[in-house]
Image 1 (cartoon, rainbow, N blue to C red):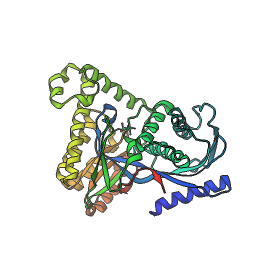
Image 2: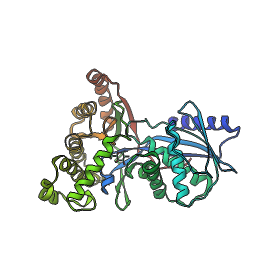
Image 3: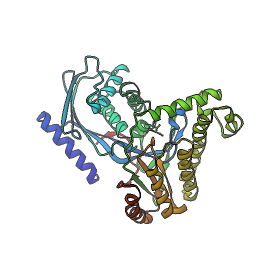
Image 4: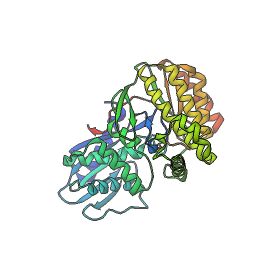
Length: 387
Ligand code: GAF
């Protein structure tokens, strides 16, 4: 176990004991994720290639005999929130973190799962607002907690869908399924190629001689913002205009033939999604074949498409991508990762280049942007489960 994970366990265990006077019965984790390629394709029924990372949400919990759920949030000054799950659960506008928890419980109940209350201490080290899915990790860890405490017969895929439903319907963000699914189903040392229509996954081995480096621009992003929903609406308008259920159904040749019939901005959005789906499938094949030169080109094209067609990158992120690219050339790949409008870039590279990349960014990024980066060198981890 890593020192980082041990620290999280110590934090939630201590907070649990302080709140209840007892040791927790269960420890449960759910990871954040980094998406290697396939951005804004999930809600278009398309393909994504994320891996779960060694930054996670952690819970210490025990069941209760009554219908009370009492939660202590270590990352919010040990704030305690208590509610009765035998009554309708309400959205709490003043305490955002509790809505992810209530939302998952409400969705589990709506699906017919039966359970009583719980004492829960929760914490996490997935950077918030960075596009690494700290909210999905929280949703999945809560679902996994009730599964573990009450032996619920719920699959990992269902847990992911419940997390997504909580976010869509309770929290009010119209996200796709990628983040919750990789948090629930991730595999050690593998990325998952996910077909977001069938929800089938294919594990793709991460080559041992390749480091996964995430660089946070520290330009904060908000997921529940209008830009995400606007992109989604534009994609739906494009699918409707092209006479298909979703952009997944549009090949590059069909788009070449009919794309001009769309409003120009809608056509640009569609072009990103259609080409990104093709790149994601090609990238999974390149990763399998350990063809870094190919992966490097696909990641570069993905970034350009997000910047020029989908228009979801910001200057700070573009700057980081260019800086890293100059160091790694074709020996590695780099692109923005996540929903956009700030957040992180992901880079794959030979371990021998990691120090040089970190040094180059340390020497130049702040001078150019006024922001200080944070760097996380990650490993692909298993999805949610008991510890
Ligand atoms: C966010 C969403 F939550 C995902 O569903 C996905 O759409 C992603 O942005 C963009 O690829 O993380």
